[in-house]
Length: 175
Image (cartoon, rainbow, N blue to C red; front, side, top):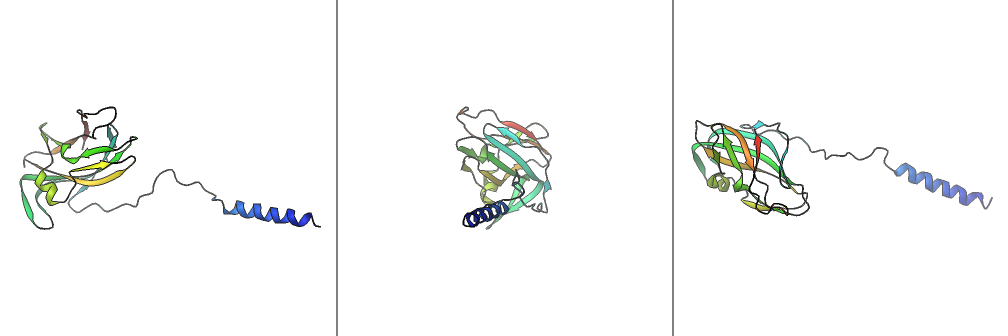
């Protein structure tokens, strides 16, 4: 009887531990809740593209905006504002200095346009930031392009990496 009691106690402990273990494995991807698209924006279904150690996912586009409004002012476009919502992710092993002002909008006539500095300031969007290892950042880019042009793509620059210190060549992403 003395030997039976410790054996029963061990069985109870082992069976108790087994029932505490999860029966299904954790999902392999993050389940992020969907967010509504802004009223003046079109959701984009563009596959992610990489430039160096930076992955770009374009998620929303608004074109033909005559003006923008910030916390202190409304500002009219010289032509039309184009706003692109994007997610950048560092897939490398070290940080990347990401420069939002290097991202070029490509129009339907093949011309490229840098982000509009005034619009970026008014809308309080970042100019540069350190994109750490496995860090993901979502933000808007604003361009002021002629009224008669249509946005067709972005020439994306991820930033200097250990293998490409100058990051001269961008990656073209079609809208």
